[in-house]
Length: 374
Ligand SMILES: *Cc1c(COP(=O)(O)O)cnc(C)c1O
Image 1 (tube, rainbow, N blue to C red):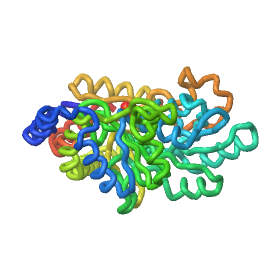
Image 2 (cartoon, protein in one colour):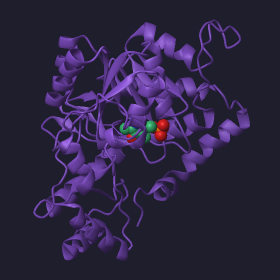
Image 3 (spheres, rainbow, N blue to C red):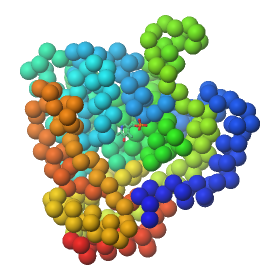
Image 4 (cartoon, rainbow, N blue to C red):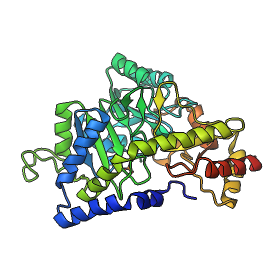
């Protein structure tokens, strides 16, 4: 059993994907080929925003957004304490200060109440200027953008939606990666929409920011890449990856739907004896991860050992909250309450989740093993 089965997906769609790859080889337009702009239009239309700019990975996408907003020294950027490192790494890389915020116990996403406390704290106790909220769509479920937007307006902050795990999710009929003033995603192979290497994208409705991101991702180009008007980076999605993604986008909605079926099957069988992930009313998750919580770390260790003995993979996303990562230890502003993030790190476990998991047989087996070890 695979944690995320990319082999089955490829076997099922081998013909179309091979043909798409071969056509790039025939054209040898490996960088900035026509498939890249085709993919950008398709992604913008899928998400429902004006602009999509692809780039080399999801981390660069976040960094490009902060560059477009000129975020730097003495700026405060609010980041959930429970997320992948990139969400905070780019803030420090830009010279700004990440202020970590506790999460909601049920959704694992940034908690709006804790967010307000953190903003007030920064205003009252530091000389930093609050600028940006990084709202992560963790494990596939969009963050609480209704509340987050209100808070952003009240304090005049920008929202950067980190949709690396959220692509394919929605709130009502509005798609993930359309909620932030700028949103980003990642096409790392294990993400909901993954390519065959590294890839990422930036989404926005704002013409000026889109223009800046297009410049920053190709050496700060002006008219072309030999006309350099600002310091940028070299961050492009290559044409082979674009070709793969165009094919995968065709069956993507179907895959997300299948993941939702599997999540439902897990939840139905697991909810009696572990804490199952909660998808809030009106939210639709793309199920980047199916993450449960045990009573404590000891119970989790027993479960992991039992699964391992039965050749069932599992993973801990995430073992350490951001505020105690070594590199952030010295950040003197992160003295807020992180008890939910801390507790979650101690007792969470992600189970196999992908569209090709057999919801009757394999899910039944995983649940049976868990049950017998608890
Ligand atoms: C994977 C991930 C990223 C980074 O994406 P890469 O393409 O690996 O650089 C950023 N944020 C979150 C929440 C992620 O899960």
